Length: 470
View (cartoon, one colour):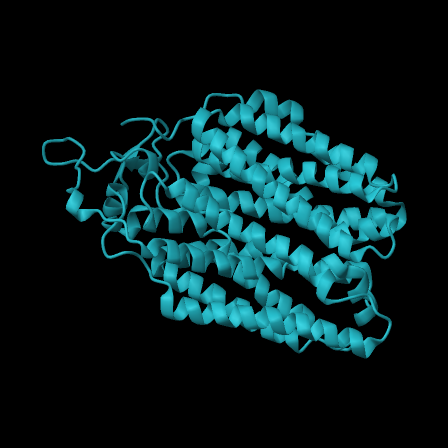
């Protein structure tokens, strides 16, 4: 889920820089391109711009850290029935081990954005990798029936790491990659997070079988935690010795100008105030939060949904989660390619949101039929559109909020998703406990259906396009 604290227009419009500010019609400050003495946009010599092969190593290291952290988000939930019996807790307690990732993000995102601006990308990724490593080792000590508090602490520390890595991809892409490859690099960084979620769905049901003997169960859980801690430690060391702040020479003219921008010339507070007056963007925040919040709820409660209709199928529950994420990764790539070719942000966003609603309805209607192969198909279709909405939301936000910082707009989108994710997970879980799985899924469908009429009118309004020339 990308974020960036550089000005979006600097990517697509080399003449747009971040060193000067103009006033819009409302008297609100906004960026303007740097000018030469003659008044024309200043261009840099090609010798001042360079692409380094090491940029791919930086991207790989970051993506691996993001994948490691994301895999631990759903590590408990996908085998929630096993951990309920192991720790002697109820389903809501296990659900909170996933929801804590969502809760932590909301109060910490603005401080982390400030840290990214003031200290740079290396320090932010390093701190994130450190929290990820520490949290993973705390969870190693929680592999005992009386250590649920340690599990909560370890998951909380890992959730703090999420705030440091979730919004990095587009910033990393801007700092290290050229104008013609920045979107691809950003997509790879985002897919690293999705790959981690896929691993989190697939691996725990394989490593932790549903056995009756508690000592044997603790042994399997400990092995799983040792593996994740070992990987997290290796990646932390890799960040310490390999990950760099930025290349010696900038990859684009826009980045060269951004390096000279005084930090006091951009204010997150002013940017947020401008965004809160942007009605189409507020509606996008709502729809993005509803869509991604539903995805978080389905992922967190997937084990309970599958076990309710297909007892003893913990491994297949993980495979269904894997199917959702893999299909979503394909959907994200296709949507990104489609947007690059057509620039139809509004129409594509509307279609994919509507298809997410259709996918949720079909998934809810077929879950109880007794055929796992049907669930695989409908869950894959749901993931294709619901997760495919992720890059659409961020790209459309770029268009609606230009020329504001991507870091600010993506942070608000992510906050909305976390809040709705917590709300949906708690409510759907309670509905499933009181009634059944079908009722819980209908609850999500109703919320997804709510803003469809508003979407047509408001998001169809003309937006300022980031490629606009000054």
